[in-house]
Length: 622
Image (cartoon, rainbow, N blue to C red; front, side, top):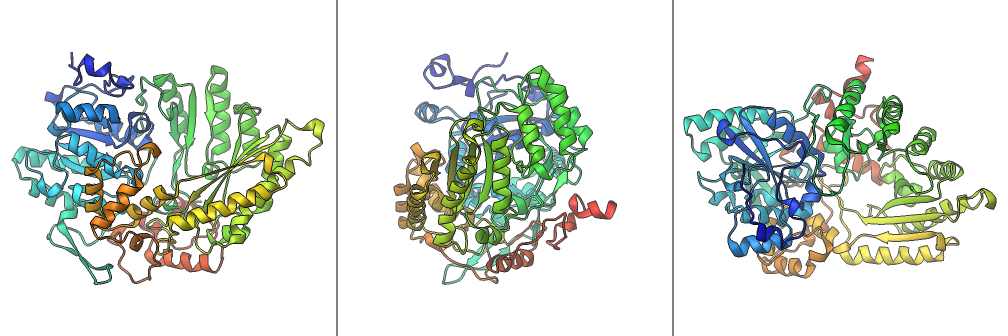
């Protein structure tokens, strides 16, 4: 029987001790002495968020299907346990075996969002693994990062031995096979990093050197090891219906953010919204086979006992077999008390029919994401949604019994004017106005419109990667202006306005667009106590500003500056398939307010066809 890493005394004094004991339903148990490789998978945030992440569920299942690998998990300890572990010198441990993370061969860290960067250092520090890769010895695990933020790994490059660029189902097996051979030979740490650098999609930061111009921009990005590649090519799983997907996902013992079965119906997006990083880095769109999804729905619900199943996709409405899948799920599982969740749906007749079957209309709300308040700005960002479509969708919903609508917008988009911002208020009002055209006796009480704004960050590998980002002061000015305009609306009492924190957005922008010089700032801020920066109660903007100043770094260089086409961007060494030339063309199209058709309407030659899969070959085969 395994011994817990934490004593009963500690477990009884901390919040939610079930975060640290493992033993969840469907947890994999192996004899650690019977495997060749021990891999610890980490999500650098609290357990409830990490356990809701589909990517880790997929990789956990994939690794553990191998007899020679034992994959375990670790999450960021909450602040109460963090304090105790430092005071008592308790090394961070994996949930399955309760063994110290530093005893593993690999520590794989998922980089899901930029605001978890100080938590990465917390994980390394508590694991007693040197924070800087240059200080690690033969006794330390290899630290590997992957996920969306790995598409600009430079701000955290000094903390990682390697990054995996792309989707995990492709070359991890090759990497593990090579490590197994290397371990048997008794090779050195550097020798394995050189071997890994030869694997497609693997980036080893210490084998590259960055040179800067006097103005702070990059002069050159050079290989300093012959094993390193000129370009790191993103890895893509070309056949999603014959690959890894868990039949028995882990079921937590406590309530987590997403307590449900998640069925990923497709990967990628055809829409080409110019602000959306996921829409570019996950191209081309690839669908899972209908029969595969039906089979997994059965098996996952049976293996977990969950009472909800959610369809996961960047744009569910673009899944070709959506009606057949949804009506199958309703017929098979609604009578068994299983709720069906359908995020990312366009509001049309099909969606309303489905939602009326799977939701309590009186309790639920409908969600629209117009992103911008005016048609002009929606054309700039290539959001294929007109005001007519939004109003018709809302009216159809109201007539079907709904009376609550959520609207999502962004402030600070390129070319934005005060008229565009005011458009958010007027569109919110117009939707409320539609409701009140219904005869009073046919209405379902008063309408509730909840309009939320986030602040725009120009992310790498989007057409807006060259764009200037607004300052915190400008963001707040825009928010105050919009708040005032909301109050001027005729239906103001039916509208609620929520907004995001500007300071967090600025830091996110710095991390998203930064280079290697940012790493020292992250380290110093962590040493001053910054962790859980995504949590408002722990976010210390003043500490971050002070740390940038102490490092003599003007953070606005990374955010509030328009870039030129020929500037070397920190992430230019990564090849995502979508070309820089295409992204620049889309940036020019944005300035001209020109809409680009989606991938199914007409191929724009973005470069993703080089992967020879998904939508890029659909027409050829039809």
